[in-house]
Image (cartoon, one colour):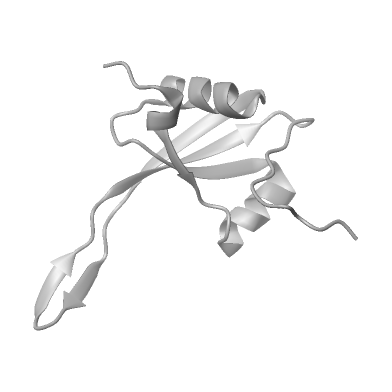
Amino acid sequence: MNLSPEDIIKRPIALTEKATRLKADCGQVIFEVASKANKIQIKAAVEALFDVKVVNVNTLIQRGKRKRMGRRLAQRRNWKKAIVTLAPDDDIQFFEEAEE
């Protein structure tokens, strides 16, 4: 199974409090990734797309929440999350962050 880096990395998770804290304190970035991708593929994709050095990759399956859809209960899809630790001198900027 050959996935391109664009297929592996779906989107960054950058707007949550936990993601902001991890980025500032530990140099870690969180991504939603393809559910079939393994840690080696995720590391290669991040290094190729963002031109950074990846030290470590942790993955987990985020279970879908049960939600009401009208009268019925439905469940959102499960998705895979990757917490990527970057080298101390590397950084990924997703938005134009104001420096004061």
